[in-house]
Amino acid sequence: MSTPWGKRVAGATSVVLDALGPLADRDWTSPAGVLEWTCHQTASHVASDLVRYAVQLAGRTDDAYLRFTVVVPDDEPPAELLRLMSGCGLLLAAAVDCSPADARAWHWGPTDASGFAAVAIGELLVHAYDIAHGLGD
Image 1 (spheres, rainbow, N blue to C red):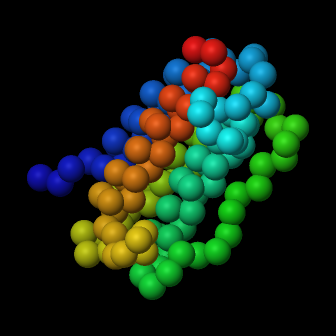
Image 2 (cartoon, rainbow, N blue to C red; image 1 turned 90 degrees about the vertical axis):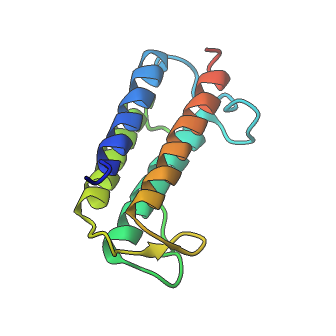
């Protein structure tokens, strides 16, 4: 029986949204914990990573990183940032679930779907902590 990695990415995304949703009315221009980024920039970074992982894996780009980023306007409201993070997380979950067992793409070396799921879950949880800490929670 295979491990439901896409479901785990979707679950981590949901946990992050549940934690950060009640904080959407706070000042997201404040620093995200000990990071130099603001909470807004950190959320944008997470969304960008999630969609890049999905594209990298879906395209099976196995020799280098695809060079693009998601650009989120500085004035994007926190609630919209959270919706973006949700969509990007679910997009990655779908890419992970649709990938055959032998699919590989580049992430500091050849990485399978479970590897992309693992790094995404780490990004989601670590940076949710940073954002929550920066917002005083």
